[in-house]
Image (tube, rainbow, N blue to C red; front, side):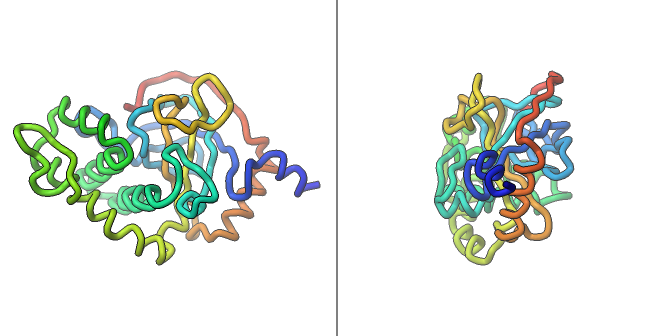
Length: 241
């Protein structure tokens, strides 16, 4: 019976629904609140946003599909931005956010790098609109990216570093404890597959104790059986972006 319930409640092994609300943020740079964001769900903890185009609100509970980052990198699951090696680079940038605790500016730069990697058009437009300087621009995109009084996309900096190191980090198991929280589509209960059409933003998170595949999948099945996967509460406070 437990196996049958798990099949009904889980879309596939390793992916299940979970709820949380944002309760705050850790930094602010160039007009945007930056990761890590804090949540009201102890099993979720802090999260890092990879979706610049959608909007989340503090105090509102949203439902997310929780998926292991490795399954998305391997191509057996999908995130908001598809699957495969693009999430390998995204996972590396998210991990640097989580590992940069105590260095506010470093965390802020890495969050902008994560936004810019997945959505350079919208992220760069916001950066240039809200006073990005040459130091920050060049740190994220590489020397020379700041030109003519504006920031342009580059292949160096934090993004270039992530592109060069993500493959080795993945092979070493560095992403085994990372998960993706993909929100539902606006006005529906399906999970979102196109940025700009989601109820909330997509987030990276961390599961405890290294998040080994076997332990994670067991936790996923248990959570699906025990949690009924959906519960929504309303409490509108303020925008996180």
